[in-house]
Image 1 (cartoon, one colour):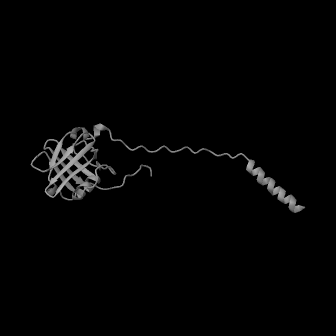
Image 2 (cartoon, one colour):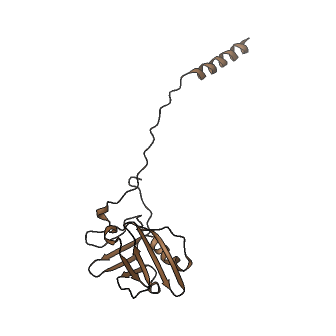
Image 3 (cartoon, rainbow, N blue to C red):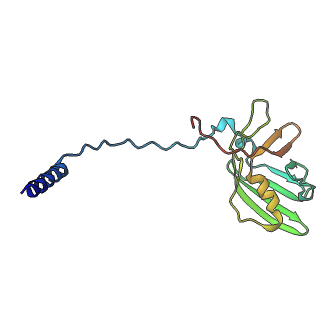
Length: 168
């Protein structure tokens, strides 16, 4: 008899607990952090759009690329518009086309530099064997210096630091 009462008591507690209204607080969903968009007045894109620059792939050294207006050099770096670029490699043993987008920041002194985690060039064309090193170079962190008077663009390998989130 005691066992039956004990079982009924346990069963009633169990039923009562199941019918008890549960207070579940809704946790607000964190808004996603938007990707930082660099204002147009801080970019060289408008200045470079529509311009063609020449270089020689044979003179490309690991970590450095020099572009100028001399059309005696076979390879062309074309800033198609204010977002897209196209590179034509015209070497004897390498004919290649590299396409992508760009976002080059300008500094107050006229030169540009890369901010931590910023990559000024994004390659959208498939990788081509003879231009792999150049594609890798452009896809990384690149410091870009633009001398408007001398009509020279100098690109140097920057620091490949991972992007950081403030407060973490």
